[in-house]
Image 1 (tube, one colour):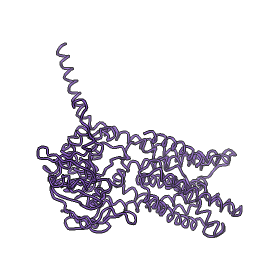
Image 2 (tube, chains in turn red, brown; image 1 turned 120 degrees about the horizontal axis):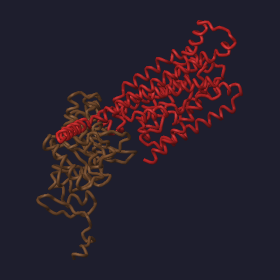
Image 3 (cartoon, chains in turn blue, yellow; image 1 turned 180 degrees about the vertical axis):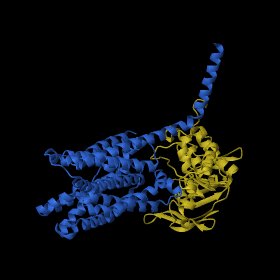
Image 4 (tube, chains in turn blue, red; image 1 turned 90 degrees about the horizontal axis):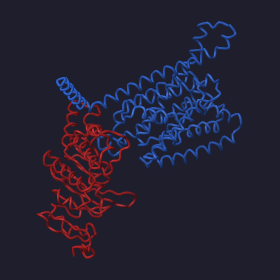
Length: 361
Length: 264
């Protein structure tokens, strides 16, 4: 009995030693496990969202025909599916690029509550479209041809936003409150002048501007998607390749400079990438103000890491899920609720929560 | 070897912060920059580390203008710590020290980098704190973690901007002892901005007193910590006493300071 006790005691001691020796690494393995779990769950959700969307675009749409007892030929089915694919690609590409540039924007502004959309990007988009119609007319090539309109409005936005963000960032880096105020005033000025133009333009042009500046995924021209895809992929790849630099930059400009990051150069490169990514995505599917904010912060909450590679991937997956699943639901409801309404509602609530939380800390 | 040549630095139209400053940094020693608020100490430090590029004049590192050295290369020679260490992200001590290896490995740590990180942590007795989060440790420990990061950066030159800010006496002394050890045991060259003249007098080999954007006086503590030099630099009346061969400055007003009323 006593022997047994001594044996058990020794075993317990050994176990404690083992626990102590593995103590330092237990947190690391725990967080790796967590990361793997997050990615598995997100992948499953993504597959489900894609399935939902494709179902909503194919079977759900064919229900009336099937109910009438008319057989659907495989060819017809393939045709319908092929029409949905470019739209799916457009959503995935836009969601990914929005998430990626939102995260890089947050890192260079040292803020968790900002995205380019929130400091006036979306109003620049609407303003550009309105101005194009007002100056050239809705029937002009610049507005009527989706390809030409896309490249012109994306180009104008790239230039405007590059200088705008560059100016704001250079004058008030690390000052979230100032950035928010500036963005608020700026988007106020742009939207009220936009509204003025919309009031004095004729009604049919106004409706065309309205259609062009709201998110309507089913209206995206398939040709455009294939032209835009390489641009978006380039922005995403170039941004992702800098993930280690972003890690250092999240320490703040001074620390990053001290550790050998050419900060001004990085700032310019990233401003160009952000301007291009945001402009292209917005011109492709329309303004999705809160999607980037929602995705990036949800990724941060889930992964609890400062490392940018997992954050980039997770926030891209979350943004894609939100957009594709939201659009799928919208299709099933036959457009009763626009997808932006859902995303902005959730996003708005989330930013309230964030601001209140940051205030308390 | 770092040489500062005729630096003139101004903000705005005619607000000159530095007026023709020239200085040669003494190798393997602690150089302390002292002076009143706005004398240009921090600006000089920023220019010397190229955090702010020199507007006129130049800073030479081994004869080469530091504005022409790639930032990544410069970070292998010069490390600096600025006043505020507020981080926007939540990281552990170990993560922070690993950042010190960035100039060498671009963020992808190899075996040698990991060894240097472990060495730096050991050197500052932070081995058992490596997995603690920076916001969960005391100010003094946090400051030590930043010093460990700079040590992992493995540069011959270290610039510190008011490292004793917000530290109590015990941690301030500990910090200066660590800095001393960097110089005596590892052969580093340290340039440090200090507010407390007595810390400069006790720990620095060389003191540079700045006034109004110019160097008022430089030399060993025994030459600089004198009423003659300090009075105009700080525009204040100093009383210097000798304590075990070190000069100690008393800076409260002598006439007004009354003796303790209980012990007479």
